[in-house]
Image (cartoon, rainbow, N blue to C red; front, side, top):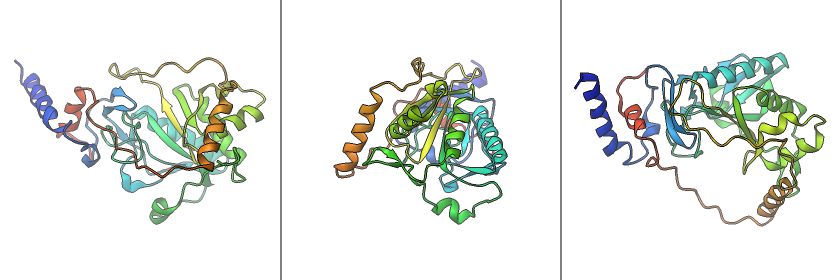
Length: 283
């Protein structure tokens, strides 16, 4: 038995007792070195070889830096940088929310997905291209909603610039799907003359202040688990009205807030134990 195989088995045995004993993924501060490998699914996975998105780049700035969730597959960071460059050419700067943790895995708060280095939240709110927020503002500024929940309409804050950034992201070939609030999706269905680009834009709860971009599994990651393909068509079917109706009802008669349980680590693929426990890290 080779030394490498012995080492792998050792770290896997550590994973049985520690990786699944609790969510410690947020305590890991640095990515695992080596070629990028996405393991598992978007909501139950991890990543080796993740890279950090620079906190400020051409046409974008990362928000909530203290969370340490600005890591992802190189394809994801390149996507954000390209979208930022496009936005800068329009005179604006994107505000980027969470990507993932240094080695992926479940976060203690905020998301059930974003575990495999292929998800990123992009705020609808934008800044002027030449304006860079202070470290204090990066942590403090609120992410404003772009919908009137009780009325089922867009907020006056909504701007054509937000639609343009959303469309540019949807046209990127590596993007698998984008989640937005159903009210936003319906408004786009009603306003767009060419609705083909709306195919990837899917309605989901929340997502009224940002859009959630999800990339397809990259070719370098055989252990990456894809979602079912997006159904054909523009997604502007009659059942979209049911989504909007349910959102309006929930807003008009809100139930007491119940804090959701943090995502569990017990559904992760076995290979994620090695990713978590390996001491080899890039700083």
